[in-house]
Image (tube, rainbow, N blue to C red; front, side):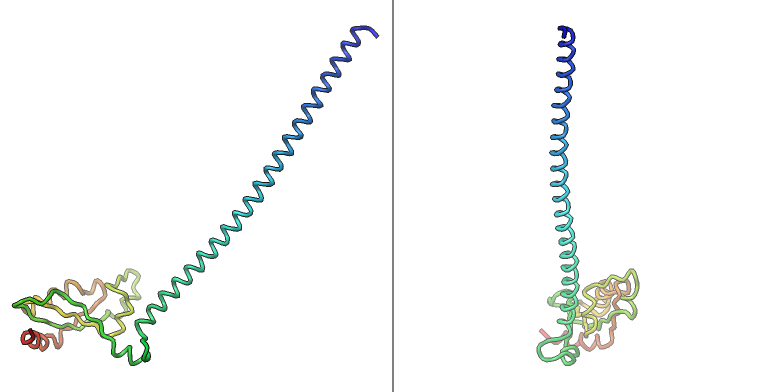
Length: 179
């Protein structure tokens, strides 16, 4: 064999060795990438599982909150002695103004307007559950007209409350006598 042939064989061998090493490096990088991809996929699956658990917990929290709202509404209705007696005896008083010399106390009966809560734009002044009971506004004012104006400015049809002034003048007379 001539030196030129040996040089050609050496070049071919070196090229093949270079390509073999390059191929081995590419395969090793491919295995590392696949291993990292599998790890990332496992982490993604674990995170998706945690996200699903979190969503289930949030739905459960929402259901519990709704139940708490329902129970708080029922608590307004019931007390320790029994439901019907407590429901009829409960009365909510809404005070407007304060007692000062020269002012009399006027009492107005309040009620939720019929069908108001069924309207889509309904916005009750306070929690709608209290309107199942007797509600009254006790207003301190100089005269009946001022008391009626104050009451109707706060409790009006726009917020779903009707104001009844029957019996208000009798309370005013009692308020004038009371200190």
